[in-house]
Image (spheres, rainbow, N blue to C red):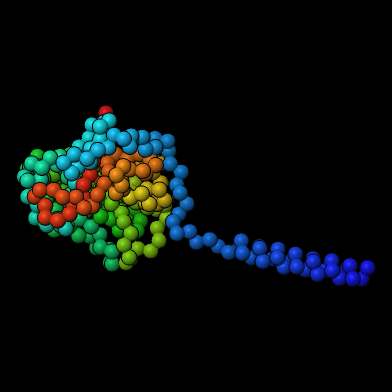
Length: 263
């Protein structure tokens, strides 16, 4: 009986050690690389028909709904021949108004903004604007919105003024879903208070994990996805489908977009 009792104690000791190890492993904090996926509303389900996309003269088209083909530009496209752009079939453009620096957070006008805004309008294109944000909080997002509106100086737009937040190393640390979404909402509310339409730009990662799209239903959603057909699971209004497009009147590569029209 003494031998059996000794064996029992040894087994119990082994079990307790294993249990302790298991608990200690599972109690270690998990550090996710991205936030938990945000629950999204049914309205945002991607209902575009993959078979309806096709390419014509180098531009993405869609058979099942009215749309326009366009591009977005900044100082990096140099001096643009806007009449040549319009003659190529481009119907709209989204022009960068400015940006917030990633080091100290100062606001800057895009060096080609005024030229691009004037040239696109004179060529008869539909025009929208975007601001490259590095906002840390809604107050900074509102500051960016007001700055962009001041740069417009009362100029009318056909398309929204978009909030384009992208992570850059520098003053940005981490930003959670609620804060980033609040930044986008504050930016859009501020531009709409000045008479413009609000919009939000994002890629698949930001759309799935960083923005709560339930809170952005009132604004134009502009997705960046560089695939033959968009696989993003939620809905969007405008698609940036390449960053290596070619358009007459522009030296080098340019982002190309397709914008669906309200029905």
